[in-house]
Each structure stands twice: as C-alpha cells, then as structure tokens.
Amino acid sequence: MSKEFFIARRPSHFSVNPLVKAFILSEMFLWSAWNFVIPIFAIFATNEIQGGNVKIAASAYSTYLIVRVITELIAGKYLLDKKDAEKIIDTVIGTFIIAVSFIGFSLSNTVLPLFIFFGTIGIGMGMSAPAKYSLFSCHLDKGKEALEWSFHDAISFTGMALSATLGGFIAAEYGFKLLFFLASLVNLIAIVPYLVYLRLNHSNEH
Image 1 (cartoon, rainbow, N blue to C red):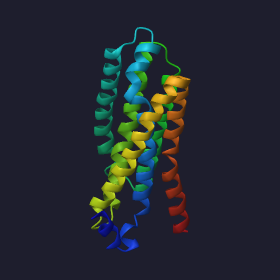
Image 2: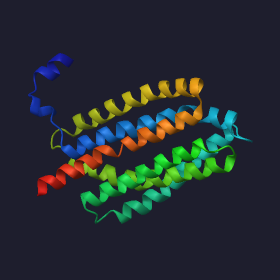
Image 3: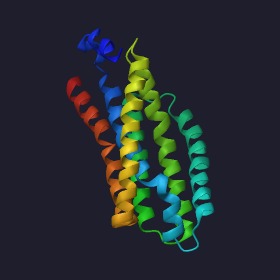
C-alpha cells in the first residue's frame, strides 16, 4: 500500500512550497529543543532548585500556558495586516526569546526564576505561533494540504522522540546545565530556515 502510494505519484507531487519547507524544518528544531527539557523538567525542579518540587514544576508550566494564551490573543490581532516578511521577523524574535529563556533555566537555582523564564517562553511562543501558523496555512500547496501537514507531524514528532531520549541521557550523564545550553542552541537553529528563506526570497525579487 505504501509502495503504491509513492510509485503512483510523480516527484513534483512531493515538492513543497519554500516557506512551508522552512516552517517544517524550523518546527523540527524548535520542538526537538522543547523535548530536550520538558519531559524531565520536574526532575530538574526537584533536584536542582532550592525549594523546588513537582508541584512547582507544574505551576511554572501553567504560567507558560497562561502567558502564551494572553500573548497569542494580542499578537493575533496585531498580525492581521502584516506582510509575510514581517510575520517571519516576529517568528524569529519569538524563537530567539525562547532560546534565551533556556539559558535562563541553566542559571537558575531558586523557584522564582522558573516562573519568570516559563513566562518568558510564553511570550516567545505567543509571539511566534500566530505568525508562523498563519504563514504555513496561507502557503500550503493547493491539493496537498493533508500531505504537507503529515510531513510536518512526521518530521517534528521524530525529532521530538529522539530529543526526549537524548535529553534524558545528557541530563543524567552531564547535568542539566549542559542540557539547557544545548536546548538553547537547537532552538536558535530553528531560526535559520526562515533567515535562508528571507535571503533567497530577497535575492529572487532582485
């Protein structure tokens, strides 16, 4: 069945809009960085933070979600009349904020910074999510929407699965500080596909 699926289609069927491709590659790195940290964050909060425990970790994560919701509602209205390049810039800024927040976790040893940096991640995610999802939805190739969403999920989830296992190994063998630095670095790499797209698109316009 899967063999027939691929053989029956020309290579052009699997070609992807450049902006969609940039989004999918970026999401792979973004969520890989996320899964370095989040599955074992409660262990970090319990073992590495003064006064930290599982309840603190859960409450800090809730702070991220609440801040993200508020930021997304504001950003969604702000982005209504934005051009693609402006949405990409918002995405890049939000992703950079997330990377800085991971560094913040590596420097934390008390409870309060956990809430601060999870809140900062909420701002970064809230800024970038409406911008990049609107770009993705507007540039999906006609008739290939389901296929391109499946590419997105397959690539992102594979990266997440690998990074969750790798993150646990790094934390156990080398400590959380290195893990957060690596998560920040991988998160910064998520910016690169958008910068490449902007550069190529700018060159094509000239």
